[in-house]
Image (cartoon, rainbow, N blue to C red; front, side):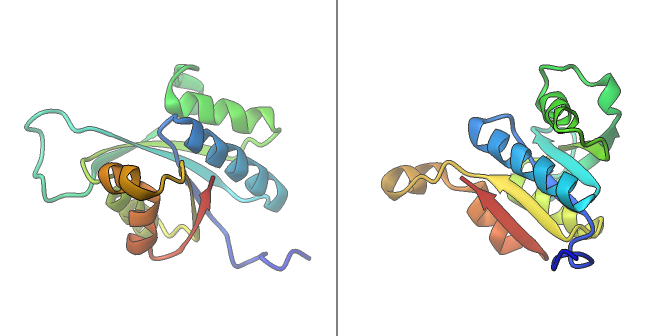
Length: 150
């Protein structure tokens, strides 16, 4: 019996298509397959100009049928990777918002995810201060565990 069985029942993997998030996608697909957990790939896109209040972390989260995704899209590549590992319990969600870490955390909380997987480049020093870190912010916002993959 897996000691995490029952502790983690739903997994959310945030991806933006970067090399760091591709590593997170791979990790999430493998752990989901091994534990037979439903997996959701989640991506945040910039809002359309003037569409909603800037106070909201995200709005308009849409479940996208993986079969209708363009293979070269961020979510399409994530779904294809999961399918290539032999895992098919995959959902893809596209959200629109300005505050990426907050959007991920809010979606995970509202939809009762137990674990969020996210990638990071692992910058340090001045480049970290200038660029910020979605992973670091996500750890502060999230109601559940966050696995940061480097």
